[in-house]
Length: 290
Image: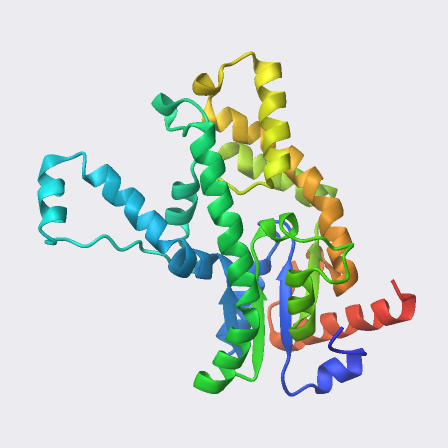
């Protein structure tokens, strides 16, 4: 860890952290709170993915649909209109819409091979965005004078790394420059996330092996052919399984940093309390040697 004690963390003139865990447990809330203090630079991995590494894919996908409409086709071919995805920290719908859901095209689904291709694009984009963290640490200080830095990661970070490998390229780069913090949910959080997802299922990214295994299991259980799968039914089926798949991976990643219960984050409303909570987590980690 880049901070060897709670006291060292408190005294550090430059606090650099990365938060990871399930989507919906407070990573972005915490990042917004720190950013609004005026002293923390907020680096959003999902925003970087959408604006830098997948922006052209997203725009081209929109253009392809627009080219099917004669009026818009003419405007595009004459360079009379532009297609610019509107991506912000709080609006990443263009990214999730591009990923889509596998299944019946008549229900908004994508052919499974196309879905797999877009998943692979997202994996590459997320790894690149994660490896950009050190650059943005230096950039935020050089250009804007921010003393502190928070990297707000997506829920799928655990899918692309090997926590058991001490030379894992991504984890080594991140742990060398930030204090990695796992926001750990409990069973109640998991149940709440599943209920929320069930009401409004949205596209997400999957590890390729997990996707293949889950897709095959769904086809076998439902009896549906790949082009007749209900897209929302499949991603609801996959969601709880994805959370269970990711939990031990997050736990292994936590050995590269510290763990903070998500319930503690829910009650944080100021930077002073946040600094205290992280100091306690560092001291607990040092004391247990875990």
